[in-house]
Image 1 (cartoon, helix red, strand yellow):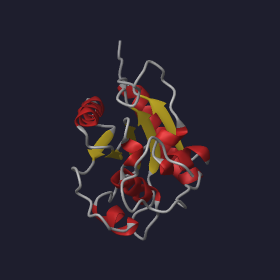
Image 2: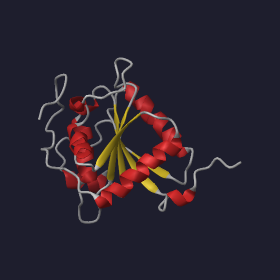
Image 3: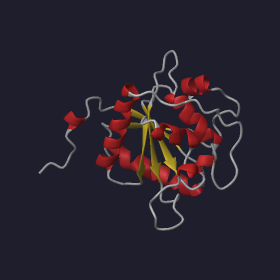
Image 4: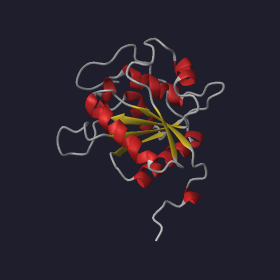
Length: 188
């Protein structure tokens, strides 16, 4: 019996996924594991991401899109405990949902990592996920999911984000972070 996903479900099997995440040790381990999960089926996803502090501090959205997210079709934000505070994550999300001359916007989804939870609840606080991601969940452009290791489930999330990027408009109205945020949660 064949347990491979039905390829007819994915009309464009080459999703170019950009992974945005906080580069702390715990989240880096999940990012590496996420790549392993997706690379198990090389027909589905091509991974991209930057190394810590690779994006220049004051770079605008358009140059970030052109230089780092070029050709990406879906951005996955891996969300650990402090991810919401990171200006690099905010800038990557802003650049991924922006449409510029030669690069149409990417789809967007968030995945809550086990490092996000300090207890056994699997609920998230909207004020402790990246604010720009929250704005886009609220308007229906993005989705959010709990960590999963099933590549077929993740592929479906990616496919859905890819489809939504054409059908819905993102919310990119929030000002770009000038610095990392501080505190226990963000406020509007």
